Length: 236
Image (tube, rainbow, N blue to C red; front, side):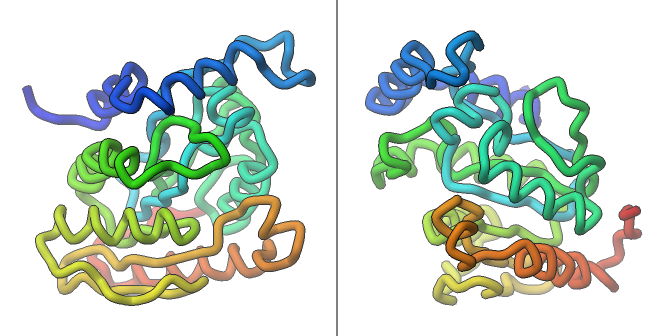
């Protein structure tokens, strides 16, 4: 059977490869947060979401306990999601500036959003073994997104995951560029450029380490790198 993004999504949703993460995601979904006590939590693996013809893939760390683990859509329903999707909208990648629930009408144009790890980890810290278990999902997505011109990693954990995945997918040496906001690593002619951003966590956004202007400017730089790529622009 030919691989597809739909097949990857279906496998992620039922994945139980990491016992610690399965126990934690299901416990969070059962106990719930007080303000969401009346909601049915997703409590499963969270698949990627976005435009299958995207030229930009954005990769986060993992689902948030009461964000994606609750709503079932990557970067949806928490403060990190609110910050990130406002930036996507301002840069022309999203049709609306909010990401609240799966059926809220959000659509991405030229952007596919995913994560290095697909289940919520305790303390937002997946183990190396858990990242390795999830790595094939990211690699398959990178292969299936055949129009990619750039991959943007949100945070150092995602940056390391993307560098390793890209080296395997594109059969190139692992980029040695260190993580920094705005860092980029070329993979060679005809291959996507790797970019890095600080993660849009409240720890970064509340302290000003990452501001809306910084993220929107970076997204526009990434978009500008597509000029001359041979793929017509599809932005508003």
